[in-house]
Image 1 (tube, rainbow, N blue to C red):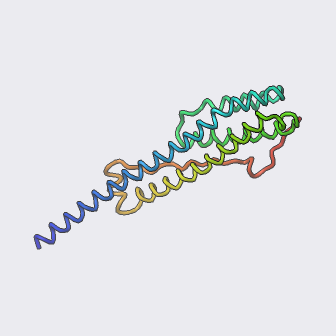
Image 2 (image 1 turned 90 degrees about the vertical axis):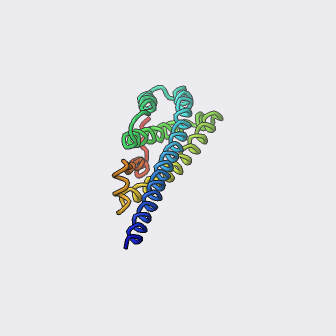
Image 3 (image 1 turned 180 degrees about the vertical axis):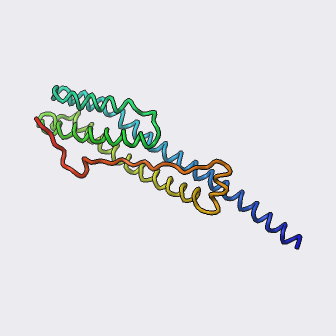
Amino acid sequence: MFWIFILIIIALLVWAIYMYNSLVRQRNIVAEAWAGIDVQLTRRFDLIPNLVELVKAYKEYEAGTLEEIVRLRANTDTPVNQRAANESLISGQIKKLIAVAEAYPDLKADKNFRQLHASLVEVEDHLQYARRYYNGAVRDNNNLVESFPNNLLATTFGFKGAEFFEIELASQRQAVEVSL
């Protein structure tokens, strides 16, 4: 009977060590996935001033859109849920900016605009992939942290679920309206 008790204690200890290491690994995967999103957001933020300056030369009275993009671009040190809302607004403003720019044939034909537009589309694609990877990592982390009996160990050692990074784009469901 004593040996059975010892084996149960050893089994519980091995399980606890394995689950603790799994929780640490998953937390690190979420952090690495967030870093991937941050890289893409930084790339996008670096492109925005160039696009804004190029479009500004063609369209002075769209200054409100341009100023809003620059203002939103400055708010980067926020929690995930606030950052997601901010990024949704930026994406909507960028779509509006592109729509305005495409209303000007000279601008559409401009080599610099085409390059910036292509770069921005590429960054948006990479950002979408990074968001998917991050959200998958968050899902796996939350499943691990919230499942019984893992949640007992997670709570004991302070592991928490992470927030999904969701960008809701109303502009993807509606045509962009541009008044000239």
